[in-house]
Image 1 (cartoon, rainbow, N blue to C red):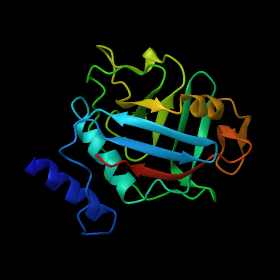
Image 2 (tube, one colour):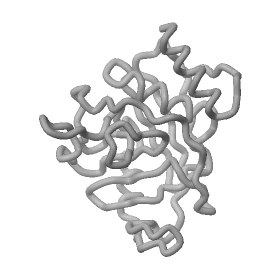
Image 3 (cartoon, one colour):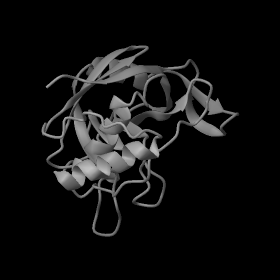
Length: 194
C-alpha cells in the first residue's frame, strides 16, 4: 500500500502538483462515470487484476485531466479511443509511461476498457479505448505484448455503441484516420463515491 501511495504521489508531481488525491486505494472495483456529449457511460475498474493501470487512470480522473477531451479515434466494431486531446486538437500533458499489465487474464472483449499505447509494450500513459467488438487479437500471446484491459462498462453500453457509429474522416491537421466528423466530447470523468 505504501509503495502504491509513493507511486501515486510521484505521478501527481509529474502533473505539476504536490497535493495528494483520493483514488480510493482501498476500493478493489472503483467506478468511473464518463459524461460524454452523447450520454453517460459507467465503467467498473478491476484493481485486483490491473492495480498500476487503475491507479494511473484514476490519477488522471481525479485531477480532471480527462475533462473536456475528445474521442479522436472511432472504428465501428473495433474501438472508441480518447483521453489525450482537447477539442482544439492540443495534446494534454502525460505522466510517465506505465508497466504493461496485459497479462492479467482480462480480455479485450466487447464492452471493456483498455490502455492505448505505442508499439513499445510499456508506453501507455493517458489514452484509453473502449472495445466495441471482441478484440481478442489485442490480447497478449506467447510472442507479443497485448493491450492492458482494466475494467468494463456496467452502464451506458448503448451510448458507447452510438459513439462507435458516428461518421469519421481523415483529419488533415493531425494526419490521423478514423477521426469523428463531428466532435464527440468527454465532458467530465468522475470517480464515483464508494
